[in-house]
Image (cartoon, rainbow, N blue to C red):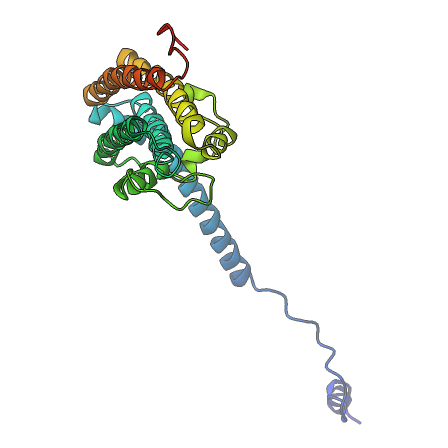
Length: 259
């Protein structure tokens, strides 16, 4: 056998079915590089979104406010005042079906309609600046447009001017708690009349706080004017409600003193 023949025999592939024992192919440098580039692009995209959000919150929003002439405090006042007036509409809507006193019913309608009017003005101010209007305000307007002189089917718990208007701890600028509203709604006749009007007095007095703060520290002239108008209206409405409350034997009926 020649050396050439021996080499040929030694390197020849064995016959028969033998399992493929070749090692698995390792990822190519191209494939690994491609994956790394994709991961880098994803991370870079996420970082860009975060940076854009921070830029929007920290630079663009204040810049937009400055250009439009309003501050975060102005926007906060409008939102708080809408929530406050929404609950006033809600309280007013309790009267039909629970009260039989014409003066109480008329007062409830007046308070509810005035509060709805303030919500419309404040909502217009927010919308003109592309600021979302609180859902409570929108739903309170729908409640008022349904007619505050008509008894509503409310299951005994009172009509709701939206979840936001009736989901709070209460106590802040005269806002009533869920339990307080439910307690008023459970009454009827003279007990209801006294409880409703007394609650409206406390509620309205509470609304003076954010209005007076805006008048003193606000930047937007229109927002400050809305706050001044609201404060003036609240003071008049409180006196009207107190007169009716005294006339039906509520707090202050004997000597006209403050409740």
